[in-house]
Image 1 (cartoon, helix red, strand yellow):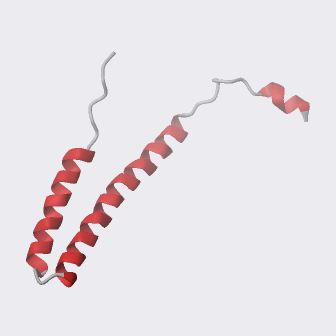
Image 2 (tube, one colour; image 1 turned 135 degrees about the vertical axis):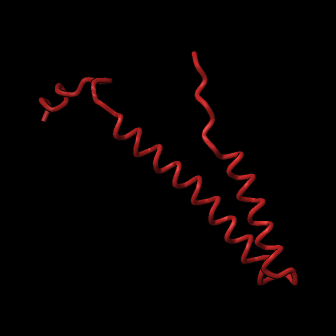
Image 3 (cartoon, one colour; image 1 turned 45 degrees about the horizontal axis):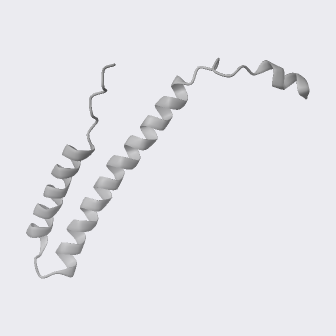
Length: 79
């Protein structure tokens, strides 16, 4: 059992696959949350207020537009 600990060398593993998985998960969480928020806003305005479908759709479109502007990937800072 002690022999396995000697095989590990900190910083030698290739972590590109883990990094790609983490980035994919965070992207899906971010964009999925925006989609759910827009759908919820549409349904609440459509069914819970006298506004109806069109104001709900406009509000959801505005939310999606702002969300895309604010949540898009920023360019990496060059060092």
